[in-house]
Image (cartoon, rainbow, N blue to C red):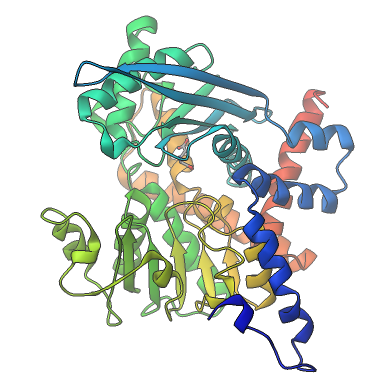
Amino acid sequence: MTKTEQVTPEGSESEHAIASRPDRAEKARDDMTPYEAATYFFHKSADRLELRDEMREVLGSTYRELAVQIPVRMDDGNIAVFRGYRIQHNGARGPYKGGIRYHESADLDEVRALAALMTWKNALIDVPFGGAKGGVQCDPRALSSAELERLTRRFTSMISYIIGVHRDIPAPDMGTNAQTMAWMIDAFGQKNGYTPGIVTGKPVELGGSQGREEATGRGVVMCTLEAAKRKDLQFEGARIAVQGFGNVGYWTAALASEQGASIVAVSDVGGGTYNRNGLDISKVFASLEDAESVTEFGDGDSVSNEELLELECDILIPAAIQGVIDGDNADEIKAPMVVEAANGPITPIADELLLERGLTIVPDILANTGGVTVSYFEWVQNIQEFRWEQKDVNAELQKRMSKATAEVFARSDKDTTSLREAAFDIAVSRVARADELRGYV
Ligand code: GLU
């Protein structure tokens, strides 16, 4: 159904809400940039917390932005020039921390937005880090492994002036992985000596942590279990649709199904696969050995990424990119609970529309903090030169996810705010307090 068809008969109960939607949809079509969307939630929180103007100015902008030119010799002998960024948003609570994204959309605005989200995420899960993010605007799938290695090494040496074990610690994000971190360690180490704590999300053989690879997905599942319990939603047997089958989407689907949920759909950039009786996630994963996309999976019907979001299910988990639920499709979302495994998958307009309809939204800055939390454990292990066992990593992660989830639900009950508002209010006040104690603002 298109927006213009959604006209309610005059005098109906929801006349006001529905009648106002085309306007809002218009605004959504105007498209806030990722940074505008991230700052929108911050400013709303600053209003509720009555932050002073100076504090609002400090927390509403970034501390340092480095943009670099990355010339890379391609396999064909030509040189291609890429653009890279490392942006530090706020460092009041500790060294800057956040991933490096390789994606075509990773421009200054997007990386800024993601850096700010890292500040709030790290404060909410209470790891002693500030927020940062990096990005290289490229399509990593179009580059060979040797090209990716040259790009990573060059980028690392260009940002080496502002990163450091106690200054700023990168990690993987979309389009990067443990191998990327291995190249970063090596490039950084050539100049600075053995420095495993310079990045997290490394291969275990190079000082990475047990459990880091699946940590974001594991955290998403821990948080979803806790949220479901509080909303009287039976997790065992719950039908879950996961958009995305990268590191976060795959592990979320695999671990949720291990916990008894029924994963009815997963997707990748090519589209999705749907089976109302539940997919065998290990089989979907194995099918990718000979297939380009999960859409080719034999035991499911193919669906588009847009259709996946609108499926009948109990829990929807967007685990791919930002802005996939917007003013145009918010009214079509059927799951009563949406868990943001991706960063910023719901636009501010869609957030309002979903809340108006009574959906529960578990926000990104809570739901996807498992990755950075285990990054913290990895960093601690590197500094102490002491390795943890996987069971210790999982137990510590569980402790922190449960605590943060309980705090967000409690704050939301106390202040009658949404979970996102509660999460922002907790995070923003922690960062503001740290800046205040430092005498920075
Ligand atoms: N890129 C991940 C995130 O967005 C992890 C960041 C980290 O481990 O530093 O949370």
